[in-house]
Structure formats: structure tokens, C-alpha cells
Image 1 (tube, rainbow, N blue to C red):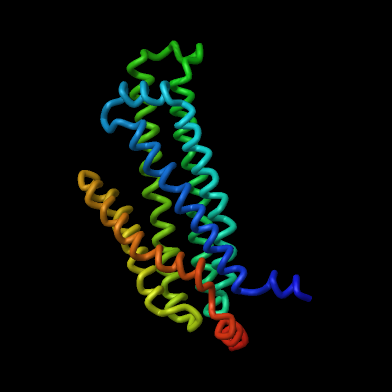
Image 2 (cartoon, rainbow, N blue to C red):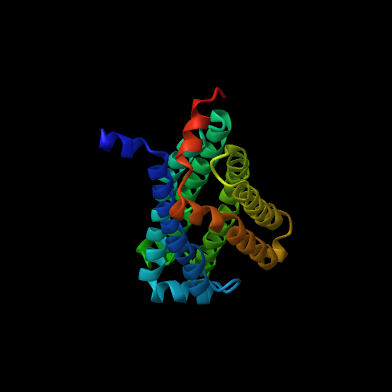
Length: 242
């Protein structure tokens, strides 16, 4: 009986979700920020190619860390669905599918990285291209990967917006957390659509998403990890007809 209660307790789901978000917060910046900023020189294909050849292990480690992120996202999607399902099953599914779509795109978005590695591998069949052409093609695929990030951010922005609404309406999470999560969603949507429409302002949009992500996501993560969820109110809400 004790084991069953622990497995089905929303408090357990909340704490595990907090741990998973912690993993994403630790691993994600390494693959999404540190590795690209260390190896990729914007607009300089030769320098970028030389950096990747000299530190291929770091580039591959970035791929592995991104894989860890989207695999963790899949599990987190299910846990957040369970936690918010008592508020609205329909909207919880919308939030879950949006985050799952984000995770799938993150996985597919690793393909440009592998193509870049193949172009810089020095394989015999690549002699049909000049070295400068190979470097340029590699940078092209690396740039394409960046736009893949903007695509998954659209789905993540939708997820956070719906998630924030559900948190606000839940009654077992503080309402302010829902408001902050919605603010975070607007940051991701601004960064994504902003770069689609005005790519020359990517640094500004980067600051916007960085600030709003900290403001919007960090408080909810800390609440899950430290406080968890109000189990009594969760159970009361779960028993109400939706």
C-alpha cells in the first residue's frame, strides 16, 4: 500500500519534474550556448571548420547533451500533464503535445550537426568539393540548426502559455507562478517570430528570451523542487467534474 501511494502521489510527480527541469537547466546551456559560442564563428566558415576539427570531441559532446535534453523533455511532458490534468484535460493535452512536438523537433534538429561533421570528415568522396566549399556548406548546416531552434521555440512558447494558464487556474499552485510562466512564453515567442521577421536583431531577441526565461521558468522550477504541490487541493480539484 505504501509503494502504491508513493507512485501515485502528485507530490512525487512534482518533485521528479523539478529534478528533471534541473537536469535540463544544467545540460541545456552547455549544448545550446557554450558549445556553439565556443566553436562557431558567425560568418566565418573557415574559422568555424577549423574549430570543429580541432575540438570534434566537444562538438560531439554537445550533440550528446542535446540528446539528453530532449529525452528528458519527453518524460517531463508526461509528468506535467499528470500534474495539470485536474484543471483541464483538454488544455493539459494541448500543453503536452506542444512540448512533445518541441522535443521531436529538437531531436530532428541534430541532423544538421551530423551533416556538418560529415562535410568536415575528410572522407574520400568529398574530394569533389573544394575545401572552402566544404567549410561553407558546413556553416550553412550549422546556421540551419539555429533556425531549427527558433522553430521548436514556437512550440515551447505555446506550451508555456497554456501551462501558465493551467497553473493560474489550478488552485494548488500559487497564481503568480502561472503569470510568470506566461511571461516566459512571450519571451520565447518573441525570440522565435522576431528572428523570422527581423534576423538582424537576433542579439536583442536573445536577451529578451534569456531574461524572460529566468523570470518565467525559474520560480516554477524551484517551487516544484522545494514545495512540490498542495496534495489536498490537488485531490479536491481532481474530484471535481471538469
